[in-house]
Length: 97
Ligand SMILES: Cc1cc2nc3c(=O)[nH]c(=O)nc-3n(C[C@H](O)[C@H](O)[C@H](O)COP(=O)(O)OP(=O)(O)OC[C@H]3O[C@@H](n4cnc5c(N)ncnc54)[C@H](O)[C@@H]3O)c2cc1C
Image 1: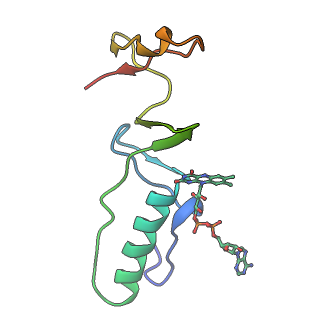
Image 2: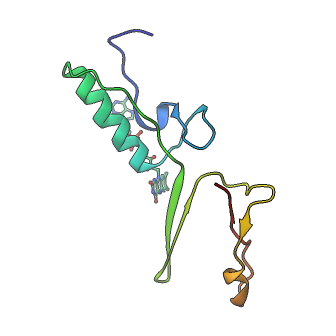
């Protein structure tokens, strides 16, 4: 690793809390945290990047929904059927952990 080269945001892969691996999250909060961490290191304050969580917040006609973690569901994970009470059929979220 070159000590004077920094990467942040969509071009950088960071630690993913969910998978334990490195990945590109390509969301604004991760880019901001990368930038803050890179800036502190550039200024001489050695700061380790702790990692981040993929998340998404959506405002659909005033209905705010947020999802965190892996998109693909989890085998045996908990399920909520609230979305199925709507005339719009949406996949039920699966939660694990
Ligand atoms: C349509 C869309 C919707 C999105 N919605 C969301 C959302 O709702 N929530 C969320 O968290 N994230 C969202 N994102 C992702 C979010 O925008 C990015 O993850 C974030 O902006 C990445 O920041 P960045 O600094 O890495 O890159 P950018 O924000 O892309 O910044 C890169 C900058 O570098 C400049 N640049 C490029 N080449 C050069 C060059 N040669 N010289 C000088 N400057 C250069 C560009 O002009 C740009 O200003 C969305 C992205 C898109 C495309």
